[in-house]
Length: 224
Image 1 (cartoon, rainbow, N blue to C red):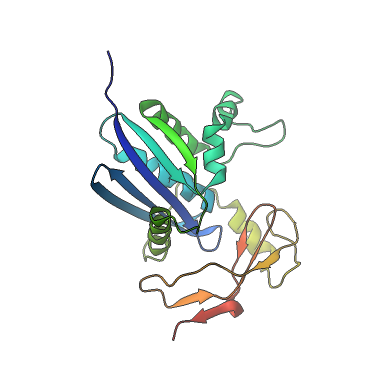
Image 2: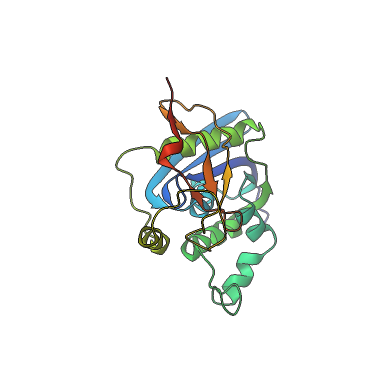
């Protein structure tokens, strides 16, 4: 029996400020001339989890098997799905290699069945490159993580949060990342004022290896 697949375009994005920290996701659906947006957030999560979660929520909304082109600026998620890494991790009982367990297993286990139900082509798109629907997903993600009374991300294990607290705060460029010990570097963010946003960060510190971000209170600036 042949299944007729509707063609749907989905843009997804996830964000955490800081990472790990309050997280949000945004999804934009395009089907013909119709368009839909969904978003949400969690009290504490990671950027990678929010990227995967956005894809899950996007596919879960579909009521029938569809041919989906899913755009995301997460190389981590797109490469893991497109190159079959997740399937190999699963075959190895969720081990990436002999010494390293795969992360975010609970989310991969939700995403894989959805990709079996639908025909999904994961496509990477560069972040903050002027792609309107990707920018909109980013906006939805950031707005969501700023909401009050966010629910708990039940699948997130807060080991990183505990480790960060026990080792003290990062205060300047060159200090060791609290997650992987690589010296952090300073970066100037690409930021546009979001609706109801009263402040931004003039700069932040980021680990060039694991991409953990550290926001400094002294770099916080308020819009006048």
